[in-house]
Length: 557
Image (cartoon, rainbow, N blue to C red; front, side, top):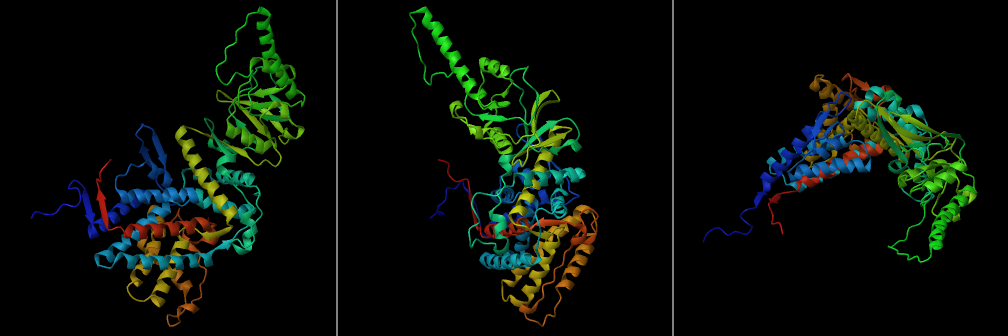
């Protein structure tokens, strides 16, 4: 008998050891792509996409999105940073580096014939302990305390391209998020998780995506970026003679067309009598005139509609001294409604006085570059805003927009969960020290190795920070480890219950590479981001370790 072919001979099949080691290699490769983009001294990556466009960025998620990867494991690593980006918006780089490191440290165990499930069990226990340690390290923060908050955003933005204009960026992110944060409709449900600061999370609804619009206008200087107290959009008034500047305008928002209604399906009209033709034309005009009359009755100053405005309607509006805008995007219209307090009306005969928006303080048309922009500013208690970005080129603007969205996400996370952890690799180092202590004292048997490995893997973040500033890595990390270990203290004789957990906020200053207390440096990160990073990294590492068979080239139907 020849060999029995079960799988189609064309398929490639990796099994057992070689599959696991291959996966680890892939993860290492992905982590190495991203490793240099961590920390304030980070490098940029320049990617060419298939269309020939160029992306310059150091946002972990963005890089991985653009890189074309064939290896399945590497692909699942890339999913990680995407999930991290959607979930908390920051920490995309650290997630990949951590997960890669977990896998690399799992490699010796696999070579020593330790079963992957044992490793995974060790990892999971370590994850639980790590989260406990994070809990103890966390400190609460008041969302409206600007200095504390700006320090926080700085740690997110410090690693980005726009860090030269940090103060502007930080201010913009804070302002934008706190502007769109509004108490949500549902009252906090009793018994929801979160205990003491439950009231805080439940009643905040922060929808950055929908209500904080970023308008990128090339030209100008980055220092001209600002968050408008209100909104703007790129439209000109429909009629050149309409007013271009109005104080305290009354604004009416429509989503119905202000032109003669065409039949839904094709309609043919036969006319035998020549007066009938004039009657028809007159009917069309009267229809538009009626609609305009219904609108003018409420004497608005500005009419904005998502559909068209016919010439006739423009004429009536101009006579009534009303400024009209047409074909506004639905999203912009919703934003207008949030900012000015107007309600969007779908039919002109249903307008009520309460539908008019009066919260806008100033309407003005401005010309920026060669485009006209409509500004609605000085809104009182606006719950929507436009962020105006100016900068030298498209690339600069795109990068700034990415950085800003990271920063806004960070603020949003803190609004949801107002706890902070020290940045600069301090949290990771504390977790690392804590895990190795606990591992030495309480974990028995085979899984002690993997348990301690997680602690070791955590050191990759401060290590990479040190690497990227170009200081002596070994010396710095050893010092840092010593500082954390000494604060952890306690004799080894004590059983693990008595270990007094001292808060140690010592980390690496990403710019100079010196060891500093993060409290003094003021680098804090949102609790949710850090915890999410650690969870995602460990869980995905577990998942990848458990793969022992890769079959590629399966049949395509």
